[in-house]
Length: 280
Ligand SMILES: Nc1ncnc2c1ncn2[C@@H]1O[C@H](COP(=O)(O)OP(=O)(O)OP(=O)(O)O)[C@@H](O)[C@H]1O
Ligand SMILES: [Mg+2]
Image 1: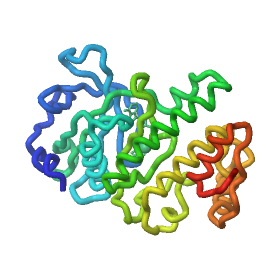
Image 2: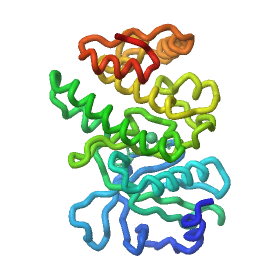
Image 3: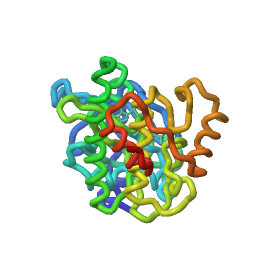
Image 4: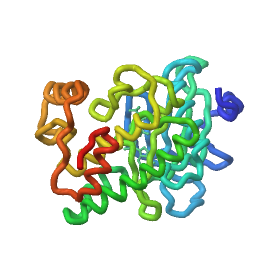
């Protein structure tokens, strides 16, 4: 168990005014932005008006020490702390844990505080159409590859690179977030995001930096191919689950992935390398 999480456990009394105290500052959760399988994400602001207009998000894991969600929360918090200060990584500003106000006595809530950033969708939907498109894709590739390099140097694998886990900050560029699937190099994947998951990860085999590179390759392929995953002849939202499944099966059987067209040879080669294809 993480030292700072365990040190905080039990020491924070849930206030009855709905605020959350992190590093001596009180934050008030606002709109629920996301309700996932394991976590909830709220927009948040400081109750004392400090930090001006800065908007925050609070990611909340409700769990019992030792269960799967607890494990995910610890990974998310610990990786966030280890990677603090890295330019292309969503900064974890603070984290804490407290006993749940409701439920059984050992239920607790893990809170992660981060700046509120533009999500992938919010950024992408506001971009001008081509020819700026390739420039933006290249910027995304460069920034996320830089984030992965830092993660991999620390012996970690992100384990769930995909558009939903990418954010944009106008001052910093693209940032990689969501560290709940982080593993050590050589461990099997904890998360299988269909379409993005490299063959070894899907097969339960050890993952390594190339596993993240592959997922980044699929992400970039999808962007330059009009929202198509490799082997899909139509955008994802126009395909049934069954069709996507068979497309993924073809990829896993080792059929060569068709190269994207309409982009520069340099970007095509780069994507090919990530996807383990030798396109010229
Ligand atoms: N820093 C942030 N700024 C803006 N929105 C955020 C931020 N962090 C998370 N979100 C929103 O919350 C969503 C879920 O966040 P995240 O990816 O961290 O959770 P998750 O681990 O995937 O959740 P689960 O595994 O429970 O499905 C994001 O897709 C995004 O919409
Ligand atoms: Mg996520």
